[in-house]
Image (tube, rainbow over all chains, first blue to last red; front, side, top):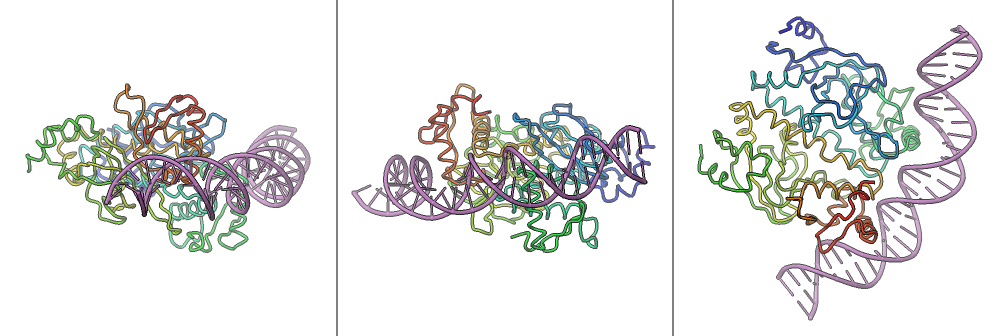
Length: 223
Length: 223
DNA sequence: CGGCGGCTTGAAAGGCATCAACATAAGTGG
DNA sequence: CCACTTATGTTGATGCCTTTCAAGCCGCCG
């Protein structure tokens, strides 16, 4: 067992806020984290149908999973931000159902799924925690059910804000993706994203400078 | 430990095709199934925010999870058919995020989540199987991302067909829900559901008599 | 048989996509 | 560091798909 890796990981303050921290920081009986990977914006983590072998804990940056439809358009199926885990989808079919790539400069911990299972066998007290993490993702993108484009964008902003805000003092967050990505994720045209964000800005519901967004009136967004 | 319950369950042929069969039929060290419940069409299984204590294996019928939005409209978030498991969503928040009710006459096995965890602790070989079942649900409703109403309905029919067809000989399946339910699930008006199904019928892509649907040309549906 | 929920069909209105042109930002190479 | 090139965002005009409202029909159950 490569304790050097474990120690390396344990020393990172990142791990404290990571969802998997509970696993990695606890005694290190099994080296679940096999390596750390750095991805540039746009770089592919894996392609469709690649064998499923790893889960990924995102330290910095963001990932998207995507599919190219018969018309050649990209559909973004999932969005995974820092301190979140990506990969559970692969368990079912034993391969990844979509491609995955980095939305920005991204750093991830690669976790052996087998190691993860072995760890749970040794430490069944972490069982609930593991199921908890997966359960979280089942209700993650509920808001995509909103019907109108305004509602979907509003809900998207509220969700991003909750997932990205490190502390409560920081009043806003940095959009980790382009308007095109947002459109592909929410199922609407890029122009619509731009128009609605401009509308929100005009109505003083949000403010945007470059990619930094502040939600000025969460109440109005939630209507 | 109530072995009577286990034996009762073991004798049911239903259990063979149930996703949880692997758990229930194996040795019965822990009584995971606490009881069997019968629900009439429309009957509520649990309400929003009810404490999470159970998973449910559906033997017959179907469940929906739903939410009433600020306009008073029902939004259907999940659809769970026979031989499937419902309830994992509750693990995360320790309560159910939506209400759940029966779409038709429904029979379910109530499973204690705690018993489920205990079983996994005793039999860690079933760990992967448990994660597998949850993973399945992560990719379940992917097709809701289709943009046009026609695409969504087509994908919905293909999905239902795959989930409901018992054997390959049976050429069709019985719609377990009303057009209104379908509309609420797919995010479109009831009239649109009716119009598009009529269109498919006119184009000989499907046939419908009462609630029995046959997919005549799966190729055309998948375009 | 009568009533009610569910389905069907039509006409009108509205939201969003599409196409197009431009503005701005980011990235590249000299 | 600047000029050029490419990617990203903005704004307007038009058309289409879907919603909404309205009315009628069908089938089921008491």
